Image (tube, rainbow, N blue to C red):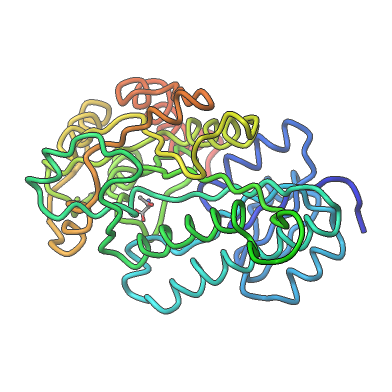
Length: 344
Ligand code: AKB
């Protein structure tokens, strides 16, 4: 039993969790994690306790409530957009019911220790639904409150959880007697496609960008499922982790929204391919458009308007596309797959 203020991270063995655990552990934060998949051993050493299980397991959440004084939740667990289309009911269970469980968890632990619990939620550009390519081209950098009509189960789930979070933060049990009872300080970011040098994604629709780079570095063939003119926003993983930490650290009085767009760069699939070929001249990349996944990409914005994030809490991504490739992705991914000089 630990009464030290502790951070709970769900979905900790995923791509964002990987980078975030490193940064939180380096800052000396006690972390407990909850994921259906075990953490990589190097990460497991950085956390106080690793729970292997589901966010749908109420008993497991009760156990964490009893054992730890949680004052901050990073709720990263989710089924991504492509995977959710194959299992929409499961997606709703994990993405929405699971989030509701975590919001209730945060409310309960906040009630028990008497402080608000910071709750970070990664939303997505999937909450947008641009009806046609002409509208997408005319819309340009889309602000938070436009085109919130997603075509995917995942997008609908993310939008629904943004509303649930805002409800817990601002309107929880608004008809009960006495002062406001909400104990959840909900803060969300709508992430673009994320590209990490340390991990490869799975189950997303923005995966063509990281898949293309990782495949080229491994010397593998890659058939890109997106048309070369496909354009959606992307961000390098270190900037995504920075954005999370900046948002969570921002004084509540500075925040004008519960969920913010964050952008960094927005290359087309063809421009990504050109950058990969420049770095790996032997890359074997072809295009085999998957019309159904393409329709999802076409419904996502070409870029996002992140003025509110820049003004309210100083969103300032370090990497544009050229520097993300030159200074982060290419050297780190190259090193990751380089043959071991000591042999296998
Ligand atoms: C996905 O493709 O599902 C995610 C996202 C854009 O949220 N990477």
